[in-house]
Length: 446
Ligand code: TRP
Image (cartoon, rainbow, N blue to C red):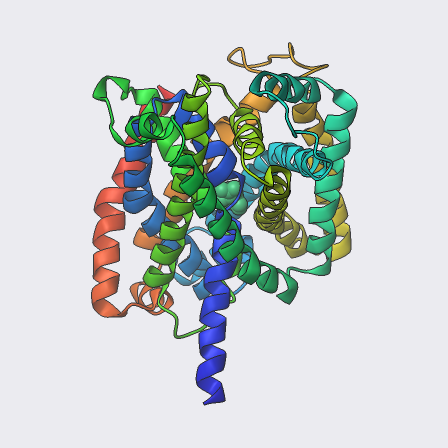
């Protein structure tokens, strides 16, 4: 009896850990603003299709490599490659993943810092009675303040790295257990409120009725990058979680559960945010500030607005925290694999992410005109190229490794879905996910 309970507990813990990594800024902050810049419904349609056709199968590939290898990404890839008689150079894929999450964490920490600032501001009631224009101007002023940007970035990174230094432990599991239902409930409430506003109909049409002239190649590239980003796939960051997966758990079921949760959080956030955008006559393509401006406006019109808003930013902060811990883990694991102690590895990662993150933190003030590539500043570069190019590239290599290199029996047992489940997965990943990722990447790079 107790055995059954324990097993059930660990399956759930695994799904929660992956959901904690997946649900974060990507769903609530990045989805609305990237969708806003890429035509709304056309983007949503393609992004959901990519989650189903690439995101889920590649997530399974990534986790099963960790599950079969039962150690850190570089070591797992190296050992499995050796076992299959393939080149040991596959292990560099682990390093590429670490580099990708390094770039991502450097801006992720800055934006999470914005949530800290907004949490404090809403607890203080700073948004009470403020007009939409005042809230917008306040956000701009905050972005342009180098001291505040650096302070919040430092604070968030410190919060993240102390947990990572201690080892990603039970505490996180418990946090996720409580956090996900609360965040979900609050977003449902917000979306419910949004349905009573003037902007709701326009928001639904804008999100769900695609106009196909909006469908450009660049929309497709962004949608693919976002599918990987939001699922936390493509940087070997979920590989580590696979190593702890219970023996008897079915990987396809877990992956589908996570993806469904992840998409629905993004949809709820999108409905809430775009209802405000249209009710207020704002521009959906307003960029990275979209969520930070619209939600305070929405809440300020609700009874008990600042209380709800404080709860929202607290939940958001906790959700980004569990994602950031997942982002930091592969780098720390990689350094540890090279023989460094965990505390030293964490310190090195923390310091270098902090330094590079300063470039993003200052991209709205001191370094606003420092545009080294493609006319984009550092924040714009690191928040687009690693998610849109590096993650799909990493995902492609991960998929090729699991689908073509690893020995069949290893994959069948690590997938945990029987012979038929394996065959279905293999058909999809070999003939849909891999070619599709390849073609879109190529189109994006040309
Ligand atoms: N998925 C997270 C979000 O949506 C971000 C994230 C966490 C991530 N871990 C990752 C992105 C690993 C890429 C790789 O906010």
